[in-house]
Length: 323
Ligand SMILES: [Fe+2]
Image (cartoon, rainbow, N blue to C red; front, side, top):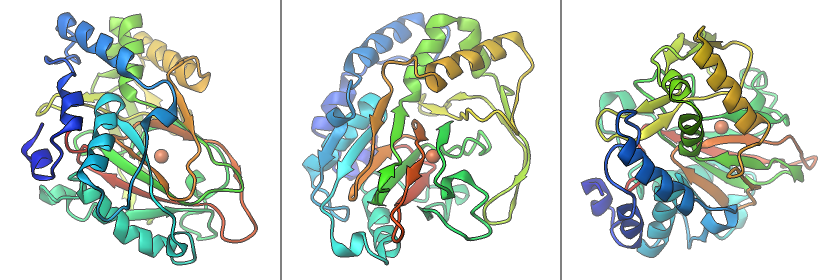
């Protein structure tokens, strides 16, 4: 429990859950004892249905201490929670993006997200509208189409020293049909790989495991080549951050047998949905996902003719406080 979490009033029921998490560093490949204890806790605590981590919240601006505690407790167990706030005409209408943008910034601040802790994270509280658009700069990118999105963590192309550690995805308007998310805590993927093969998990923690070549971003800026591990253990707090994409074009994996085996295993777990702990959920209006950047997909969708599907997304450098 950090001082930041305490100052935000995240200290009660959520802390009880966080405390039940075993100590030690489970992500240290040399520390099998810590790993075994954590693994058992993780697999026995993990939700079996998305509804188990869904909570009604009175509002985005000022969730109560109990509401925050419930969300943080879920995130401490599986790195994600689904919240549901009352829908108002202004949060689904034509100005929904503007209204919700301000509310989501406030909501995020209750979990210490968006607080500028250093120069590098300054200005990184931008909230993006995810909707079908004809905007030239965006329409080439799959998120802004009706097409399915394959497994990824957000910002997998970021440099590994400035990863996206958390994100919020809020639904202003669902699609008429489709647009469901599949969700998996990357720590479960970590467990599956480590249980299968020490060499494979080591390969996914290698600093040159995954290379995303230079490309042009939505805003026209050139994003440099990004080289880094899939699983990053934070040198300061020991938490796991994950950079992953199931894309097969414009990506280079380290040319090594263990890396190839690990990538193939992740594809079976995720792409072929062999992993039984994958959760499925379709966000409805007023619902959102608060997460430490979990693995996710989106199915294709069909809109109404007007006022189609609108989701708002915020990404942060910080983890959710208290998790
Ligand atoms: Fe995403």
